[in-house]
Image (cartoon, each protein chain N blue to C red):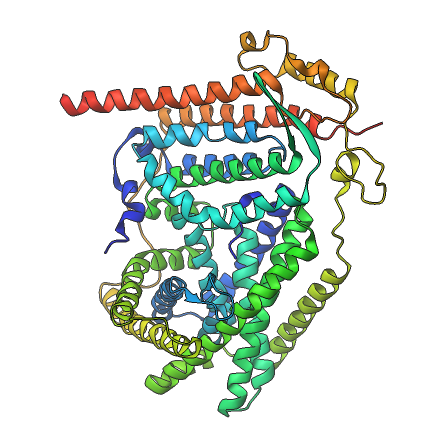
Length: 265
Length: 341
């Protein structure tokens, strides 16, 4: 199973891993909200948002290459949309950056801001997920009164996702090793659907077996966990620092926002 | 089709999140009424199935270099009914966001609406509307194809609408809509063909699976409601795309561009702008010592908009970089020490 690496870091131990999952989830939510509300033409401000998640990743001993790889996978769609601002917004502007001064367009500022914000919020999410077990997050959701059935569904999905991804990969690999060239679309489609169909039949079989096994062990549609959450001093400190950091970002964005929206008289 | 946080403004993200949560809450209640313990396991596994089927990217015919994958909401809605279908795809979107960072945390509302709630209900309504009581294969295929194609297109149109309302992108609304529609036309056709073929395969091998949905088939009244909702959504999309403006929003109009006034210079007036930068410089200083050097702000002409704040932003970025390096260095040293200890 080569997908186990997706959240293997969540099972490590570090000060960040030991923090209360409720605090981490709340901070990630508000942090993301703060990042989204930053002004649209401030790449420098958007860059500051990297700082907090970066600290969490380093202190949580998550390899930065892991985070970079995840960001690289999901970057293209945002990058395509961000790059279009280069074409559609060519308002000239002068950029001052310390000793440097150069002519550019608002499109560039927008593109850079969008990308930097994207990376900032991705880093925050990666920091949350790679330092918190998914089962703990589910318990938090349950505490926060998210409908039980959704939490159960998420738990089931998480449990079997890796098994089935692996099965799908087996199917894809089996097909690849038996293929010398790409066929006509019609044949590709026929083979593709047969592959998906066989994965579906396999998952249905698996589901029957798993449900029977779970029911035999007394599962009646409820999730139980012995885990107790309590906010310790470290958790409060983390919450305080995070609030300070997010508050500072919001204050700066308020200041910069007032420049960005100056109206000509 | 997964949207990132940055393509949405905070009010739009919050609004769609609220709508999606409300919708999901109702869906959960519906499913809880109907689902047995057997079905809970089945729903989890089918979710994992659609998740992994989404990983099989098939090359798009006619569009070299691009590939598309199944969305699966229609397939699930036909197999398990619209409520369970919507719930399963919502959970997939949540897991994709959390575990695979595919789609933003704030955009979760939008993604759930675009990929789970609308496709499951709209697709199921269209499927039922066309199939009605018929059992022949031809009509079944037509129903599945229409449901899959239309839902993919509607979801594809919802993305530009949400970004246009947010006003984050500079890309003109119509261009965005046409690009999305043209690419998703092919993806929708593929989705339809794959759904038909998978269901045919299932029918052949395990015909009993297709009757899973018998219990949760909507009665006539709720079918009418679903159909009305579906038609309403379609009309809304069509009307919206006809009348929506691709002109700059109020804020952009105010200082960046005015298409109807070509002589309008995109400026923030010089002294005013310099003043604000001045006040900013005095207020917004992370490292005041670095801002003491005279900045060339005074030399900027009227046409320029100095949005980047000279030494302050330079000092800030350098400060942030240094902090990152320090954090990394300290952590590295500590780790070395622990390893040798």
